[in-house]
Length: 176
Image (cartoon, rainbow, N blue to C red; front, side, top):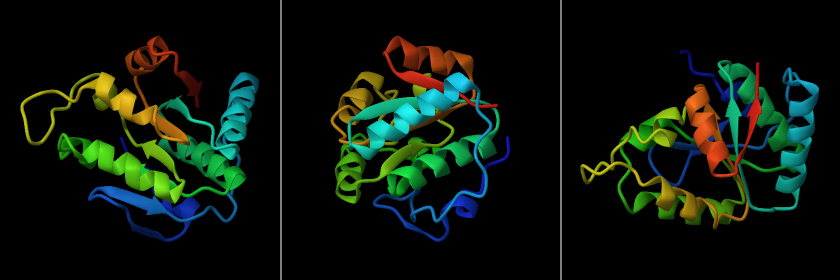
């Protein structure tokens, strides 16, 4: 799977609060609108509306096209005038038990959208903490994320991951 170059949508990037995160600058204007169904367009507008109000919200983007998910993220960031904290898969593989709470707290100061890129392994309990042999505790992950006063998005490619999010009453937008 090829990785999307988010800098095409977000301009310059700077180091984020933790290694393997990038704080992406404000979107100047997305070049394209993401191709969405009518239902997904409505959900996208709802996500944007909630993010503009700084209402806590967690959702997932399900699809095989990282480019389309990047466009959707760029459009939401543009509409809300928020920066995006891109959390890469490398962070999951190097996450210490204390890192997640630090990440959320430092991101809250930035008022940024948190975007977990390629999060299927994380959602499916396939990642261990770097400092123990224990898998990352999803209940703990979501209890920390639910305290975040902003938008958190998980980028997914597997139906099973989307079903796990839906089981937690988290909405999932399908991209094409």
